[in-house]
Length: 536
Ligand SMILES: [Zn+2]
Ligand SMILES: [Zn+2]
Image 1 (tube, rainbow, N blue to C red):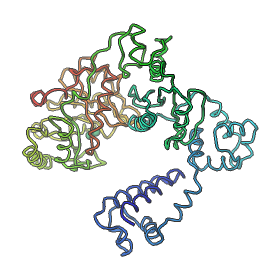
Image 2: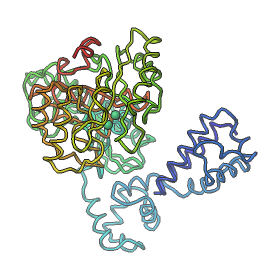
Image 3: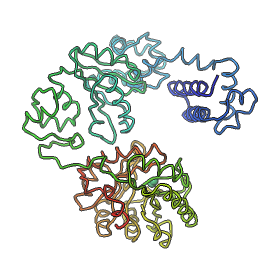
């Protein structure tokens, strides 16, 4: 058994444990273990047999036992058992209805149902409460969820990157087009839809139901179906008549308010043609939140971005070195990259002291020698202390070429104090950009109490730009706030806050968010040349 095979089995085990609602630490441990094994330079099977496998990072006693079983018998008994027991279709359906995986399976087995329709029948016949563990409260909740036909939203919005992965994957597999919230690049996606031009809708609907992403179909009629993923996330498929594809795409893209204001939509095979028939200019999906019939501005394009001004390296909590990040940025066609590692007050991870900032400078200079004319900029993501002072002394900041200021700790401050704190930091003459201004984590932490209007005033006085952070769970500023910032006369920076080479790809998310705020090329600082950044 080679390393890749062993890693595959561990990953499969992790996925099934996830399906069985197992402890998330355990699941993560197995995934990390699989990653380590895949990357190992020596045959892991030999290490296992020699009793030395725990020398690998992240392999503990529990995983070692599984590995021994796998290497000695060619199987993990519990994995085989889970594969027999778990029915992804029933788990997906149950999760869609608000049940955990275990409860879903109990329910489906007790009622002997396999589809949403069979479950509806059983429910209508009053059989739900015959199932052990289903009391009147859960019965009511299920009946309610089953009755919600036509309205299909996940329990909570999907992060934009996840939503693109899912909807884009389904669209590609069916030669269709991603629509719904992802096509408008909403920060948290609820309406997930794919539109196909289908002369024969039955074929497309059948292919949709058979996709690996879709474990159960909960609704279906002639030209439309709703399927759910194993996480219970609903995806809508519209199989449009080819001559109506444009109108169907526009309608499925939303937002509902935007579309309603254009109705009645004329039928057309392409979206452009629908707009022409309405005598309107085509509207980029990012601007379709509220009713709008005007001429859209020339929004910033991802290709206009000349460099990334916020990323991390192994000096703080990043996974790649200065040179690795810089090479990756150069490969993406950029002219410059600012290395902005953390400062000590960030707390949870490592931060750079003044001495380390200087030592990092040597590494940056070395990278510049190799990579010129590409330019690595000496930057910092400097913590804003609770009193508004910065976490590095001015004489250190003065040496740097790009200073981001960030609130990390102490985010529960009341509004006046938080606003004062940020204001104070913006007054520092070396600060060029305020990172993730609102401090939210989508689905996890609400926005900081911060008076943005006041912050915008001060930023304008001090010539500080506002970041549009491209991390999928941040997207901060978000679209509406970008628009407010631009109206206040400010400029924005589209950044990835990448912690790995792959993280640099989140620029598309940042730019899309800027576009949702109506940003043009001129509004975005890092569409400028290296000289404009250095001279600013
Ligand atoms: Zn940060
Ligand atoms: Zn950062």
